[in-house]
Length: 357
Image 1 (tube, rainbow, N blue to C red):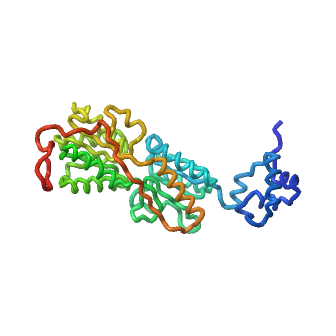
Image 2: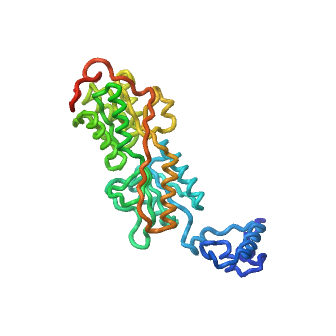
Image 3: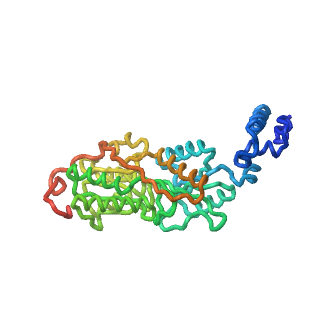
């Protein structure tokens, strides 16, 4: 026969206090400063002795806090996100919160449904890796507003707190590296342009090329619809068809870079002897590819911790100043990039801005 659940009344009886006093003693949010330290110690000892566990549903109704934060990501299969989620969970746990994780499969309709379910469960805030450029703030109007922090995304108007990599600087590093190896015919497999990462990295590519005195023509960029290997393959096929003499490809993320690998092999081209490839994110295991992938790295775990810190700050101080944190990138050079093939303009050339056709 199952044992009876220990109640707050049991704790109060053992501690010799009224149940309301026991409740205030065990919930600092409810009664900070209203119960003497000696009484708090006596009630806490009674609760520990009886093995009392507060009812989280009842507590959330009383305090209007569930101590949960919804975390919504677009693709759990993307190796970028597990360390980000770990960083979020670790920092939230330190603040007394737990993460409620949801995966949208990059489906806006599914995302709307999941956000509604999270509101029904009274999450205290949201950390979103799914917001698209130009979309309205995801929390509802009026009293139903929830604190929202973006992770790996930045709102167009910078109106929401966010943590992201410095996408522009990262791609500029990649372009400068390739040019230092003698590449001039450089293409870009861009990320989705309705995401801040895709738009920022394309902007970084154009800026990086301009800094090196190289023009970007209409056939030098192919835009992916999603950050998926299949899209990288499609885009790289198109890039090779319209720019057959390209000697290097900057991909907007590592998943797209994997698709570039497949397109090069399909075309009978060797990486990096015929065409170098650079990715972005430095996902786990890209150093195990053949060849190991040169990629732009930022600290994924730190991104998660920073996002959790921002949401904790907004929960503690509603209306606090909006912060947008950019994590510094670094280029990790591996065997997927090498000297431009000899011959033609790919091996160098004169100064001045030019098309390297």
